[in-house]
Image (tube, rainbow, N blue to C red; front, side, top):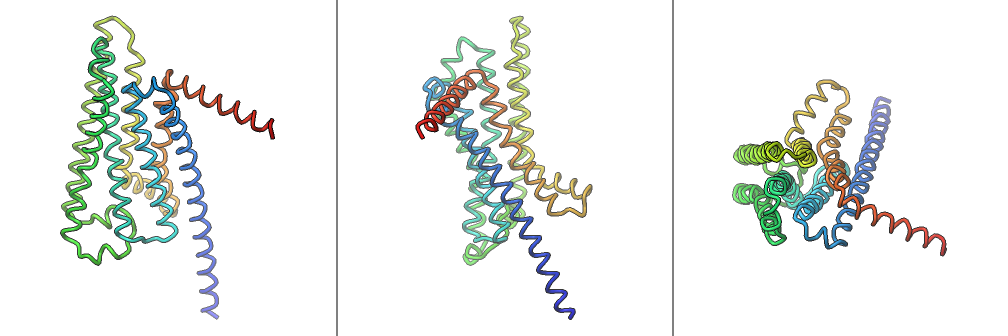
Length: 312
């Protein structure tokens, strides 16, 4: 009799767990599709117009958008896999984590590069076209990719050197702490994260102050440029949420100790989804030039859909 009751209780709990997991996965995948569609429209708009392809500002922006698309897809994939299978193969997990780490490290570097471009445009307007060329922008993007990849390589080297081969054939909960678990890697991560963030913050603050001083010296209004730098700072703050995930999770658990799964899911939305959702609106929709071509593209889609529906 007791066995029967315990079994029924386990089945009910299992169904509730499956139902909640399915709901969370549907929410996450739906948000991923919506955000990826918005970012995809921006990438398509960029590729269709040569005037955008040859502007360093939009080149840096669209590469950051593409970086966000990859990061979001990896984050959602890891979330779904952890809910469906709980543990996955270490080799596959290692590949996904390395891509995610690379994208995470690259985002602040793109923000710093965009701030520098804005600073040059305001403080050196006559030399902007000579300094910020298409070729130099591609070199800068290659440098960003290199710097973003450098923190990942020591993790892989240490993992290959210190873990046995059968570890790569086992399964683990796919998070950074369970794969790159050696203490030296955690210290290295903290140092690199601090170095990246301090460097980017210094660049943003320096760019903002120089723009303000240039505006005062020329007695001109550079409100748009200053607002752009502030938005860079806001985006950087949102990207920093990745480094504060544990703190946010613990704070929410302290306030809502009975809702462990809900708190974990809320933390995931705040850290992984929210920054990717606001990024295209902060830069793409706000910019007048990009917005003009984006509106033209959306209008063409609407007209085309109307023509198709009429023909049907």
